Amino acid sequence: MNIKRLEKIRREKAVDALLITDEYNMRYVAGYRGEGMLVYTSDSRYVLTDSRYTEQAGRECADYQCIDIGKDGYGKSLSKLLKDYAKTVGFENKSISYQFYQVFKKNLPDIILVELDDVIDELRVIKTAEEIALLRKAESIGDAAFSHILEYIKTGMSEREISLELEYFMKKSGAEDLSFDTIAASGENSSMPHAIPTDRLIREGDFLTLDFGCKYNGYCSDMTRTIGVGSVSKKQEAIYNIVLEAQKEAMKAIRPGVCCNEIDRIARAVIDDAGYGDCFRHGLGHSVGLFIHENPRFSPKCDTILEPGMVITVEPGIYIPGAFGVRIEDLIAVTETGYTNLTGSEKKLLIV
Ligand code: GLY
Ligand code: MN
Ligand code: MN
View 1 (cartoon, rainbow, N blue to C red):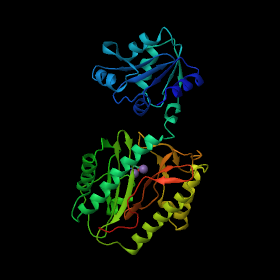
View 2 (view 1 turned 180 degrees about the horizontal axis):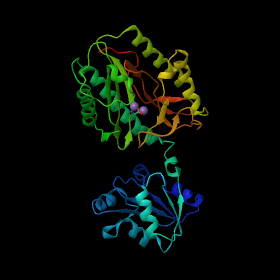
View 3 (view 1 turned 180 degrees about the vertical axis):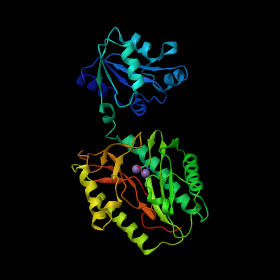
View 4 (view 1 turned 90 degrees about the vertical axis):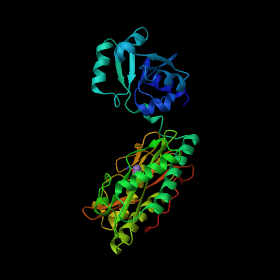
């Protein structure tokens, strides 16, 4: 990341130093993947950490001076570092604990603390071409995992077995981690949008919702497909097609200049008109980057205007409690003229 962007924030916030503590912001700003915090001033940059991470910090962020907090801990180390030249410090009030805030207040009693809110996160909203290439690669690992799992699934397997196979496949294919806990929800469990995989065995007539993602070089993938097992009823098929229609209609409207809440509204209207408005109670989508759930969102409350470089999921669903649910999720990148779909997996109703 171009360091001038941090300097701009420092000036706008009128502070002498910026303290960056959010793990995704540390990675974005400095490439640092360990624990600790970054301190930025107009003429110096530090990583404060403990001895477990000092060598890593040296390797990952050559432009930063590493300070081992040792026995001083973070409070005293910050006090020694800042007391001579910082009167005001911007800090990430949304990422530090109350306990750390107390340590900070106690050790730096004369420093004015300025809340940064989301300003560092906002640096990450528009993805560069390099970031989009990494997101595309992560999503392609998800696509390959989905193709693999279609061949692997048999009736009598448990949700846990299926989720484990997806995870194993993604890691074997080069993923460094999962981007969130895998969801494999079958039958009546599929009506819970964020179901946790169980020992339930999948059987003929089930819907099986698979929502999974991995990280490639830090960047997350996220996709959902709902498939039928053996055969499905006319009602299941009809609901699947409403969800698919909602997704397609919303995607048609994605382009720079359109408000995020308008994309949500379009999908919600399709589901409302079909009589299932009460069964779609989450937002339509969220941005994805180094973290799985970023802003802006396709949600009724989000008034952000779409810009090229935003990468956002489109994931409508209908969930009928105690019966079944359907969700279909793709990851799109907004372009100059519309969008490109980073997800390549089939969306017509597949029966395994
Ligand atoms: N299960 C994470 C998501 O799709 O948002
Ligand atoms: Mn998902
Ligand atoms: Mn998602």
